[in-house]
Image (cartoon, rainbow, N blue to C red):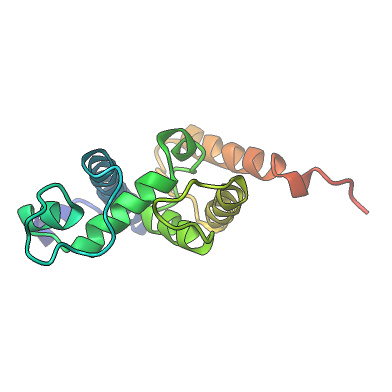
Length: 167
C-alpha cells in the first residue's frame, strides 16, 4: 500500500473514515493475537526463559513470529482482562490502545481474577473516551450518523451517575 492507494480520498471526512477503518483492522488483529496468546499460554510463566528450553511461552511465540515479547504480552493481557463478553460493551469507536490504558489504570495484573470494580473502572474510561470522540461520519449515510449519536446518548443515559435526580 502506498500513498497512491489513497488518491481517491478527496475530503477530510473521507480520510478520517479510511483511517478509522484501517485502525479498526489493526485493532481486530491485536485482539486476535491476544486471544491466541491466551489460548497458547493460559498461565504464562513470569520472566523469560533464559536458555530457550521452554517451547510454549510468550517469548517462544514472539521469537517464532519475529515480534517483541512485550508486545505479545500486552495483547495477551488485554485479551485476559477484556473477555469476549466484556468486549461487547466496548463502543466501536474506542481503540485497542484506549482499552489497554484503561486496563492498566484499573490496577489489575495479569494472572489475577478481574474484580468487578476494576472492570467497572475500565468501562467508565472507555465510555468516557467514546463520549469525547468525534463520531466518524460517512456523509453518504445519515442514518449511520444518527444511529451513532443515539447509541452514544443511550450509553450516557445508562450510566449510574446519569440516573440521579437533577438538583
